[in-house]
Image 1 (cartoon, rainbow, N blue to C red):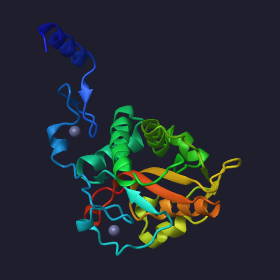
Image 2 (cartoon, rainbow, N blue to C red; image 1 turned 180 degrees about the vertical axis):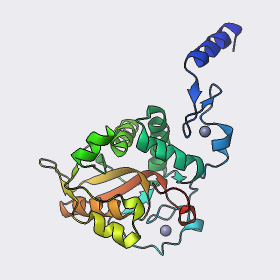
Image 3 (spheres, rainbow, N blue to C red; image 1 turned 60 degrees about the vertical axis):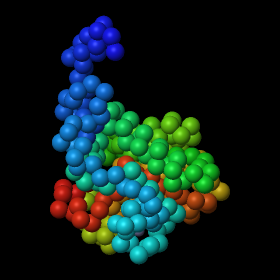
Image 4 (cartoon, rainbow, N blue to C red; image 1 turned 120 degrees about the vertical axis):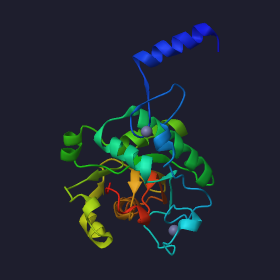
Length: 241
Ligand SMILES: [Zn+2]
Ligand SMILES: [Zn+2]
């Protein structure tokens, strides 16, 4: 790089410093994350279990059947990724959305290459929740992912009533908490289609299962899930998301 370009880059970095995609701290130009975060990123390495999305060596789900057909994700929700997911829930952070969408697109191309996906969709919030937060992080991720995969984004589902936050509930309570909470939006047709359902994190899969159940009830052929991260049992000591 010539001296002029270097000077220019330094000036840009001084005015708009690059930020770590996970913690938001300033970092040197042309890097994605800070050294501290880098140490604690745990990618999910293939081959993966199609039911829980974890690496086969980490899978303990016993291939428990879900309402969705398959799930895949680039990261375990621990360390830096856990911080990044919490940031997504608290700020409309376009840098983190873009980073996670890139990683999710790579996972979809790798894991779902034999699938013909018709549309990308997301887990809806109630109007009140969306108004309080100002955005739906799942929708932001789904929108960015749909653009990367050149697929249409469809707001297929609506959330009919307020539920308790899933993060404080047991697995059984989580399923009961979201039972009947979602429905297909008027005018949306998913019959015969393969839908790619997007969320930021999957823990027990209760919410995703309930959404997949409704999509299938209305005739969806397949429901594939991709999330920015998957929660591992050994990470339960961290703040729930
Ligand atoms: Zn960081
Ligand atoms: Zn598994």
